[in-house]
Amino acid sequence: MSGTPVIMRLMASAHSVAEKAGSIVRKVLHSGDLGIVEKTGANDLQTLADRLAQQSICASLSRRFPKLTIIGEEDLPSEEVKEDAIEKGQAEEILQKSCPAEYSGLKEEELVVWVDPLDGTKEYTEASRCLRQHAEVQTPHGGSLTSHSTALCNGLLDNVTVLIGIAYRGRAIAGVINQPFYNYQLGAGAVLGRTMWGMLGVGAFGFQLQEVPADRRIVTTTRSHSNKVVTDCVDAMEPHEVVRVGGAGNKIIQLVEGKASAYVFASPGCKKWDTCAPEAILHAVGGKLTDMHGNAYCYDADVKHMNSAGVLATLRNHEYYASRVPQSVREALKLD
Image 1 (tube, rainbow, N blue to C red):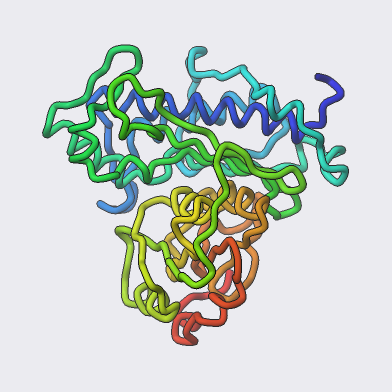
Image 2 (cartoon, rainbow, N blue to C red):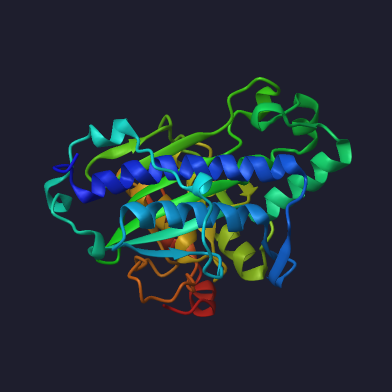
């Protein structure tokens, strides 16, 4: 183990830590008490799951890698984290992978970890309200959701992810996406959750890569944060179909699983912890993520957290979609 490169050990830990966080997210939902607070308004919420999941992620990674720089979405007070929230495991499948030569000598202090403990918080809270209304949550053994209640939730839980991204010299090089409620449609008895991960030079795992047919343009965009600039940009792509979902992590999943050909969000609402992990996974399979001006985002520790020039992500044909961005949209979105 001592001879295993730091980046591979960190990825192996992040995989297990993300799964632990996913279980926390599920447990809070099943408890029925989300502990919601508004951060900057009704569309910017924080739940108990956000707080507990971030504490678990940051404490678990910091204990094993004390020299890491970790930046989490939630601004939380320093407090002791309970021992049962610490994840000590590592994913053996990652430790067995060969590390790309360019990353084999990286040190902890050279890496920056961006954490979104619960991406898709709005959909998470809406799903909770829906489930409470119909009283269909079953709690034994960590809980599962009945097929009736999940149908009533209209896919809201698909939007929820846990994101852990790793950056080196400002570039997103590795990431983990955990979907806590994956398989929830199968109802009682289903094993919930899945974890996807990717690293440049290694590949991406935990899902089946698929692409939208070349003659189809399917754009995925925001479900709840739209405005005229966002709509104008989506329309300019001349899509055959528009898929509106929540969460940056979920939108990248749409791309890599062949449900969308472009993720278009012409707004400054997205932040670095939303895009670092998804970008790394997308890049690991040959995709691309930029701002609306075609520039890559930087993930150094001292950068602004806001992705002020929007997000444009594709699995293929990025240049085509970038060329369709209206000049009015470019002018409306400031460069970082």
